[in-house]
Image 1 (cartoon, rainbow, N blue to C red):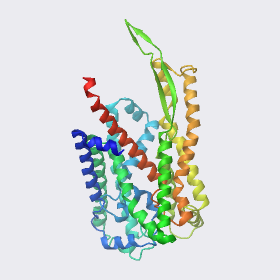
Image 2: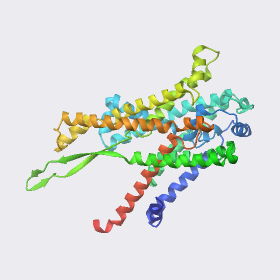
Image 3: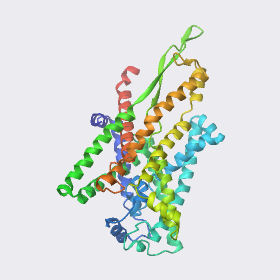
Image 4: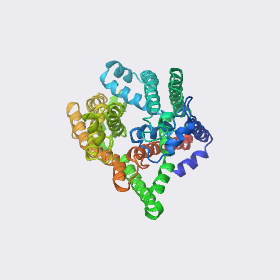
Length: 437
């Protein structure tokens, strides 16, 4: 990885792209520390420094915002509204024929879907911004902080609308910065910003574990977390690179005096075909009952049951529900993102076939069978990786924002591998430029 970056900096145009990407990252990180109007910054810092606070309910969004959520800054919502909008549009593409037709139109259709994603991102930012402001005003953002009720001193309608508009505009700016990186920088801009947000929370989380440790002034716990993190990174790299390659043979066709086809290739089916999406789905779904219970009044039986079983990360019901949801969403997302019938039809159209398998329906059935078999280990792997923070809770009392959690490791490793691949591919294009001429 370091070799690829060193070679990239020696290439003038790649160096410009890398420096441009670094500049956008600096702007993004500065924005995560600028508080929005109407917030008492001193009281926010008092609540953040309060060691007894419980932010597990907002841990996922806070991680994706690089810690900006709990500080209630202009980039408090981070990239989360865009991620949610992208996932919703991807799911609706399977359900709504109009979106499916746009997807098949090529670049023009993709641009239209991207525009819909932007609109939905702004709508979700308004909704989530309103929820965050209401949570901050009620004091529920920091449940055990003594000055939580004074985070928003002026609770007038004008101040509330100003706060929501500011956070929505911040989300739009984050989306624009991500698109700038994609167009003029290196890698996928949204993924890069997500990578930076998660990596920015690592130093403080690691140091908090060291300060809270009891063995040898916390250094043993600190070293244990580092060792576990390295093992997890190695495991994630191994599984993320693993794939089942299904051989495909294309028949030779004669058109005039020229022959076409007759080549061999393969269909790469990754073990973790669903990526990080099932973990995000499961986490978001588990937050809904906890969020409803938090704002519900009284002491009803259902509220007590949720607070006892679905808000504590080390509870057996929470662990089993979380694991089962991840496995379910892994199969669900693979089913809607990879269509064996469509792949089989395209192969048949261009004269391709899998050796030993007849073209058409038998090929689709074979692809579905292989996909189901490799999705099982992939979904179990996702579930086990995602439960690492829970094991940390049980093991040595780490908080919900355990730095080497499954979600953060999956995103960091995935984005890192993809970015390095793009740099290496661009380097190869420049190295072989003389041969192409």
